[in-house]
Image 1: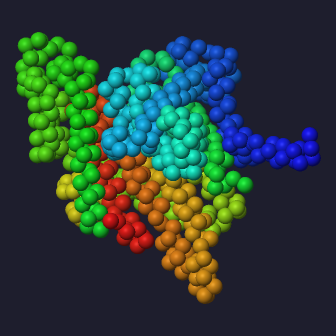
Image 2: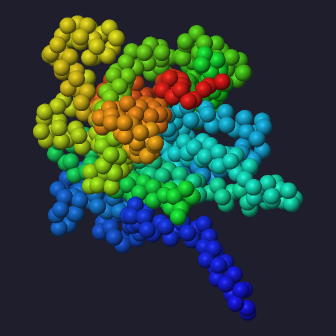
Length: 297
Length: 335
């Protein structure tokens, strides 16, 4: 290989750092992303290994042990009115909370992305119909919308996830449509179209990969909102129908009548919500900074 | 300008029509029949048929929808399934309480959020900035219901310096309802003790509801002020010898306010949703508590009409925000 060719290869190698590798590298430098990622990772591990971490069965209580104070040898966070171990309920509750959050955001992103792509790519009446629908959905305050959907579908974990997903759909549809509209006029898209790349391939191979960054950031932040909304539904008594199911929001609502003498029952699940939401928010903020091309060096 | 407002108002029509159709279908597609919900478990088949006829549920769907729209246009949103009271009357009676709470929360958020955002922007990179950023992140991450419970526990139970629920001490004060806003009615009645008591009742729910907007306004103000501080005209203002305070208020803050105004509009929707939680925790007799009670009691008529009314308010507020842009920023010309 000649000297010149080697140099070209070296230069090429340096440039080969793709968007994702670059974003990941910069995320590792972001304090917010690291702290947020650690918190989220902590809760994910907690959800996966819940049976090994939790000392008690979260659904089973011993009435003789009800209302035990926190920080005792047997019950780290105390027990509730049914004598169930609060710590075990929080550990198992992470499964439900994270599950609902991930499921609802996945549905929201998928449906929203499909609608947003259709609107942003085809324009015309497709765009008009979809975006008016989005306007209608955005005109209803989110939590209110979720409440209405749950009362409509009935109580249950899947129903809660669907309710929160529906609230998310218009947000993602609008976001992706906006990105696609600006990408339509990008030089490389015009170039690809002019060499005869078909509509589907153009959208999937050329435009979507470049529109996906903001979508991922928004999805991470939406996870934070989903955790809060799921807990809010639980708090309002629209949580899982089986009262034994450990769900953070429901745990809070169970206890707010006993605030006088058992504040720990509200305190610990509340702190679990705050920390997990903080984790998703930090991770989302960190990712936004890492993926923002304007901030790239 | 007038043209822009009219166009925006016309755009509201399809949105509201779509909303009403959505909500209409909601009621009709509900699993279970409204008639059996009204009559309860021991309904006889004859009674169910009679109630269905009375509600017009036996007629074709499109006739029902036209009827419903006709009712909407005349301000008739139906009656509560359980109390048979007019939904609009109920709403209008409770809405002032929610306005009172929302305005308090927003005042709290703006009064603290803008100065704090300004302060952290001016002290960028110092511990004040870092501390403020961390606090605002926590503020965004605290769910209203948790913050509300903790405030209630701390300031109404542990150190009982503030009332834990309600809008006024009903044993001590009687305020004749005029506007249904307790503070305003107390002034009208000349009951100053009652006015102070009503204000005391507003503190905890106001803080609970206002904390998230406070954190968001603070972040947006900081980001926006940082942008403006780098502008040439700010340097020029300093260079020509204007006092720091004058530059901050006349040049920086005024130009940094645009994004903040957008957020205020968006936050109103969140406040209306958040009012459901706050009012439930603090026994505040507003629209939120009313909606919550309707959810618990399965009173679909109230839930659906309430959603429509709150959505109407939400889009109206956002319209007002859009219009106020033009006044704040002469660079935007609506055509």
